[in-house]
Image 1 (cartoon, rainbow, N blue to C red):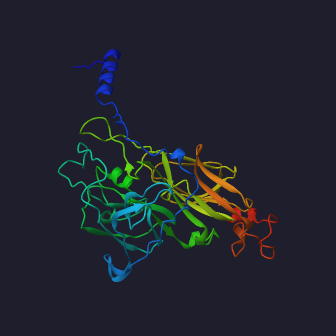
Image 2: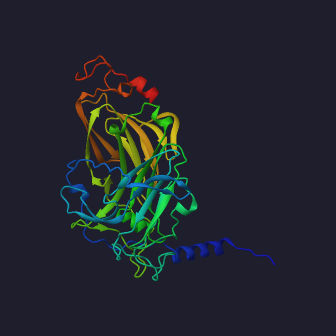
Image 3: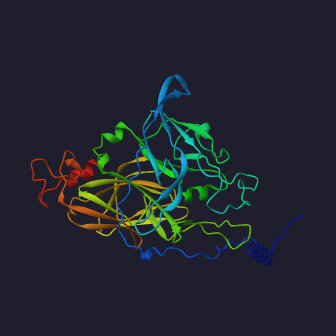
Length: 391
């Protein structure tokens, strides 16, 4: 028996399918903060704290060995995202949004305990029609996934491995991969997007000797830039849109009108007139970023999600998809006294205030004033070509 589908039958079936499965339309939003009316560049850029080990613990894979042990609880926090807005109730790793940056070395494993100290009620509406978010599940469930890491299954943070408040799990991260920047985030089935919207994410940096031999800007001049977007109510509360369908609040993606950098709206960063290393991470739900500098200067990309590139690549713009990371050098050596803005498209998201004199110090090869020259003079000789070859 043969089956024949006419063009008309196909079009009718497609039309019916589209009608029955059309994307959810967001319901009308409550009054929200108009971010275009907020003063720009009034808050200093926050740098996520560096996680500190609380001690040594027995390595579960090698009982005669002990490993650095970290404890990073998930708990509520009041975040200050802008000078002129009330505090924003959020969820955090370790009391900050983004959470503390974990720094590890290649080939040296660490243990991280992730206690769940969150409340029993979620701050956003849960769609119980979604797989893994059924009504018989606890409203607040968490599990941590280290995005981009090579880890054994028992430490991967599978979506179904969630746990509730009052419990904790300890994961072993072997760090058997090249130097790179990873990020950790909530991974709970059915409510992952909501938990991350609440603030559950942070960076994880792996370092190694190969990277350290490249004479890159040292830690003082290495700045993480974690990008995410949000909607805010006038009282500071986060807002996550819901659909207009009763009992089915899920929407396919989220685009907020406020872009935050390390948890601040349109912050500024005081920089010296020298090269800086920026570790960029896009932790937004659906937003892509197209970044550029108002000075017209290039970014020099040195690494991607999984490690260093064979050679630096000069880019006039940096394009970041959700969950993507990149590592760039920006040289401010010739911008003494200037103010340069980092933009996403036409939107200003961060201002660099460059010091009026060129920086000096031991890191001359990456753009500092050469030894023997006057470190305080404006302009003058610069070692930038060498810096680009080395960096």
